[in-house]
Length: 378
Ligand code: B1M
Image (cartoon, rainbow, N blue to C red; front, side, top):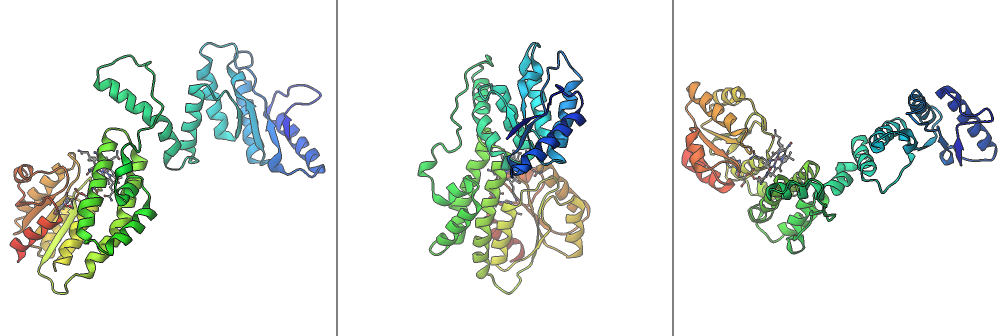
């Protein structure tokens, strides 16, 4: 049942009058056995160019009808901008404000791009669009096209935008575990990893599937083919697979400690997938790991190194912006005069750079971290 919030005496001027009419409509509808969820009230959009004060009255009415009476609300949205230039700006603004206060049946033209862009954006902000999936689907292609044109030096912003979203191009041939990680499917990644572990060495799964998948994800993120929610989902899927793989690796661990190693992802950096792999592998080879976690302040590394008399400090950094924190940590260890060796790793590092920041060793991967631990601690 669609009810208009007006009666015999015409268009009510205040929100309170419209809400009172809505209450009458509900009372009447209920005598016919109708449920509230089947009643939609239209609180009336008047045109702002003629009755400016009415816009807020409409919004107040929608809020109350939605929140207090618990009813659905409809509005013929574009009437707000009648008689004005560039109507779409006003229409979109009113639409979003109305949706925010409870408009759930907007009467709009779905062929107007700006209007639908606004609806899709609103749903992401309101949380209805989980992981901003619909938002990304709508705009990823547009973003990629803008980037492509920028790279080609094309300035015409009004160019046609391709509608296909380049999310899964070329995935057809990809390994199932890599595919699950890239798509951010944690359950699938876990199940596939479980199956693989039956006949594949855990480190091979990490090296040949998990890391390459994350590399592709990182590359796509950088090229704005995928976006942060998808990056996070991929990281979670990789972590789900790695939890199983790490448990398998840990089964082979030895009981005797060959020496203590501190591991930390440096200050300002929260990437810890690589560090955690290094941890499990080193433990596997009998080293006792003091894992300080991620985003670890410089001084904390120094304090623990001195307190626990640790001979090898391993630092991880994944961003160009955080390798400076790595250098500060190494400098602080030197300044504190603590006798120890440092090993650094992480995708952005190179052997040369490691030397430049004063690290004693550079480890390209977990296996070389083991070699280094062997030569430092035995
Ligand atoms: Co981010 N991220 N991320 N990210 N992320 C990168 C690093 C990036 C390169 C992606 C890109 O744009 N191409 C980019 C950095 C760009 C740059 O600085 N050059 C980036 C960015 C920008 C960001 C954010 C800023 C995004 C944002 O919010 N706008 C944000 C950072 C927030 C912060 O840290 N303050 C961010 C967030 C995230 C997630 C949370 C979503 C997630 C991390 C989840 C987690 O770690 N718990 C994530 C991920 C997953 C990545 C990528 C895709 C993959 C990283 C990874 O885990 N690789 C990454 C792109 C890429 O690397 N290709 C990217 C697999 C891992 C096993 O490899 O860590 O290199 P790696 O470890 C290896 C070796 O390097 C070595 O051994 C490991 C095993 O072989 N190793 C060591 C590593 N540490 C070692 C230490 C050692 C020894 C060896 O001794 C101590």
